[in-house]
Image (cartoon, rainbow, N blue to C red; front, top):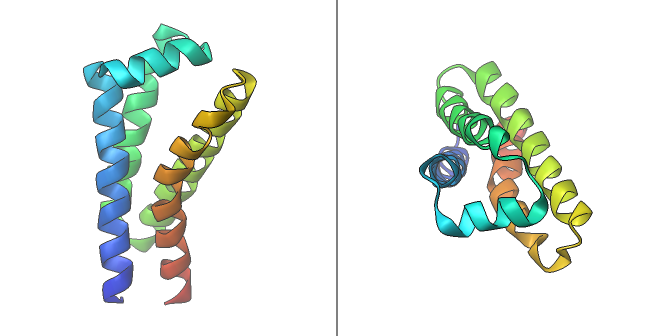
Length: 115
């Protein structure tokens, strides 16, 4: 297990965990965006929980690699869905935001597979 893999995985987990926390705590900048994109309020807890679970899964993957791979794939799919939601809402200027969160997850997966 390389140092780069560990650092990138911890960064990805921290970013996904913070993003989940922001949804669950009702941070204004997240809640306003979700409303603008037309995401039903009843989904918010599930979305925040999915991101938090993905973050924990990435960390668990440092010890049990298959869990990390599953969590990484889940988070990549989650953030791909976020990009689709942003595009559906025609908020094209906001497309980079979910991609910023997906990038370290993709990096973690790539580094994990290359080891």
